[in-house]
Every structure is written in C-alpha cells, then in structure tokens.
Image 1: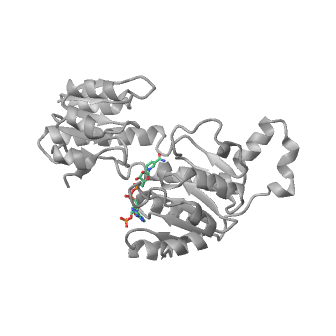
Image 2 (image 1 turned 30 degrees about the vertical axis):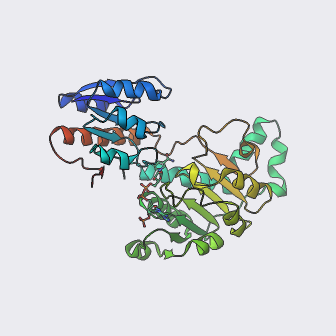
Image 3 (image 1 turned 90 degrees about the vertical axis):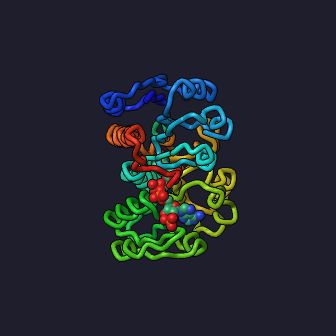
Length: 321
Ligand code: NAP
C-alpha cells in the first residue's frame, strides 16, 4: 500500500512497513501538518498512519473517502470522527495498552510534584527567592495512606492505582461506567458513585476518555464539593475539566492543588494564570513521550496497517468492531 504518515515516527516502524513492501511517505517536520496538506497527501495515498492534534472530521472524510484504513498512533480518538469513518467503511485502529505505564508515570509524577510543591520550589530558586521555600505556608502534604480517587478505571487508571497502592499504600476508590471486581480484590479498591468520589478523595486523577458524557464534568460545582486539601490531576484530556472553573477553585482555595498533563486549549498560553499559581504543575501533554513507548506505539500502528494490507482485520481496530 501507499501509506502517508502525518508526523515523524520512530524508524523501526517505517522500516517494518517497508520490509512488508509498503511505500511510505512522511511529514517529517516538527510542527503539525496543516489540514489541507494532510488531505492533499492522503489523496495521493491509500492508507494513513495518523498522529497529531488535527481533527479528522466530516470534511476530511469527504475528501479522503478512498482510504483503505487509518491507524492512529494514540489511544484516545476524540479528535477522529469514527462514526463518519464507519459510514465510508474506513476501518480505524488505535494503540491501547503500550502507553499505559508511561502515562500513569506522568500522573504519579504530577501527584507527587504537586503534593510537595516541586514546581513552585523550582520557580522560587529560578527567581532568586530560595528563602521562600522553607516558609511554613509553603509546606507540602504527604500521600501515605491518603485516598486516591480514580475517575475512569481503565488501563491507565489501573496502572496508577497499582503504583499508588504499592508506593504509598493509598486507599483506592474509583468511578467508571462499570465495576471491576477483579481489580477491587487485587487493590482492595472500592467502586463509588461520582459524588462520593469527588467528596472523599484526597487526590482525584482523571483517566476517562473525552466524550459527550465526560466533557467539562469537572466544573465549579464539582470543585466546590472536593476537599479543600484535595489535589486534582488530569492526564486524560483537557476538555474533561473546565479550566476557568479550575482556576477559580484554586484561587479561592476550594482545592489545594492541581497537576495537568492536558489543558484546554492546547497549547496552553504562557500568560495562563495556572502557570503562576502555587501548588500547580503543568506539563505539555507528554504522557506517552518516552523513546520506548513511542516506538511501541508506532510499531503497533504499523502492524495494524500491515494486517489490513494482508486482508485481515486490524488487531486494534476500533471501528467496525
Ligand atoms: P481505557 O482503558 O478505555 O479507560 C477509560 C476508562 O474511562 C474506562 O474505564 C471507562 O469505563 C471510563 N469511562 C468512560 N466514560 C466514562 C464516564 N462517562 N464515566 C466514568 N468513567 C468513564 O483508556 P486508557 O487507555 O486508560 O486511556 C484513557 C484516556 O487517557 C484516553 O482516552 C486518552 O484520552 C488519555 N491519554 C492521554 C495520554 C497523555 O499523553 N496524557 C496518553 C494516553 C492516553 P469502563 O471501563 O467502565 O468502560
């Protein structure tokens, strides 16, 4: 097949595609390809290996209805009109599992960094204010034995819960669409309704996918119900929290701190008040950004396209299932 790759990916994956006889072209600049260039390139090719923030919407699919398959190099697919792809019978796959450990590491890192004011301390030193670091109002809080509430107990939520249990013996509560009896046994975790999760957690970590149901679910009403000492972590999608309401909740000390790997919008502007706030740590969507994980994701995406070319279903096919 002639395959277009929308972003620079590890060589191991392009080598694998070439080894299977595919002709590969790639947008290899560091910035994001424009929508029009993406469409133009797809029109010259038969399949797309897609990574990036562009929306694959109705206009995209109308222009690229000839595609034999789209292999996403991500687990989230909220930026892809999978229902529209289905109407054109274009199969779409993602890369679940291989990024769960790396992404849960970032949630863990943020939880710890916020609890000990790590980013704020770094700023004090950079601003020549070392003496502020040890003031009593700038003490951290400990995680040992505290309650971690997971919103969306899927693959990444499970990996974080396991780490938090092992390292800090945290008490795990969670809310998901469905209950997970095996995991409850393994981690002594408890399923709770959304309200209880919000009211009882010392740390809430968001791991659901972004959907109509979850968009903006963490809003002013929810932040008001959280403990004043609570930490809010989001490594899933920025759209799941209302960023203005989060800023207000932090300013009014309704919650203690926040750690974000995902923001709304992305990129976050440098004058965003969150970046100046105490007890806030922001990262630029780097959940899966390790050499090992990105290579595993790229290979998985390549294997999905190889399967299609061989007349098989993609192993990680989202639609049609
Ligand atoms: P997953 O295994 O599908 O887990 C998602 C979980 O969310 C599931 O447990 C699901 O519940 C739950 N959920 C969905 N809708 C819900 C709702 N309305 N209320 C409560 N729970 C809900 O996905 P994953 O692999 O863990 O990935 C999770 C998300 O992380 C992805 O969608 C992606 O957006 C994000 N992500 C971010 C990065 C990053 O770089 N920061 C990297 C990878 C992924 P059920 O199990 O009951 O269905």
